[in-house]
Image 1 (cartoon, rainbow, N blue to C red):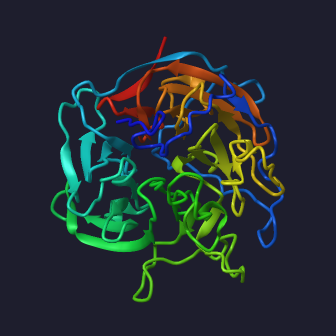
Image 2: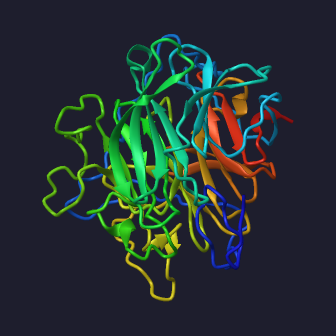
Length: 436
């Protein structure tokens, strides 16, 4: 699903027509600057993102070779291939694949037009059941609109709650809602149980973000793009009085008659007194197309889609401004005019138009199938199908390479209960990595 607007465009994930400028780098480059940059008042000094995520006792943990002193020995990155993960399955417009963390060994697959499918985590599976169908509520008229996000409540096994992010019309808006699983059948949701948690007006049909994830702290994180159109015409990326262009952090554990969510007391802009929305965790993002937490460290990794020249990877810290539309990648968005980079959070890595046109954020690999990939952040590009991995020590990137030129239209990555990764492609197939 690509279309042309005097140039190559991304069908889903990316999210805006570029101006056709040639890329400036054929190899992803590394930003070695410290992410925890100073930020302007009233923002607090960036701090550790969240407490370290501790795997549950029954979660398989990768067995990584250790030196005599107990320090993990991480193998160098190596080239990989991709292969069909579920050869018997094929679905159009897949955008999310996740495990509910309930011990059931099931996977849930989100289809952009408005359905969620459920299937056993078994390579031999040949069919999937419909878990939720809300196509009548979802507006997928724009290439970047639709059912875009799914997150299971940390207590899903006991309360049956899960959350979705979808586009709606009349007026155009992004909706975050809570649903409940059917009491009678764990493979079917109650479509009448919807509780709308948050609605955000959207001025245009693109740059909707769409990712929702529960962090290790139990709070719900929500990714919103700048609202769309080229150049961020409304200035939403740098406007903290709007929720657009931001990662939000809210508490959905105790909704009451007055509100469907609360704002955590330690959010960086609580009681700022300057009109900043207290829900904002970080801002200055153009279109965060897929963000995830490292299940071991709690670090929050984001792939932010660029416009003309650069795609970027960020490790997000609370209160930090990631620069859009002052910056694109690690350069001024309008180079001829220059820009003030003071207090802006630099990206971890960037790449130009020679390597792709729309980043798809991925995961830090914590599985066991591919020891060479352990502790590496994996990400790709929708347009080129290239997939990279990098290792980051908290201050600099220590290793970075292209894993495979897959030629897939990578809409998203997925992760199962064991930390193994999957690749969703708009060729209607699900892939996984394989050794060469």
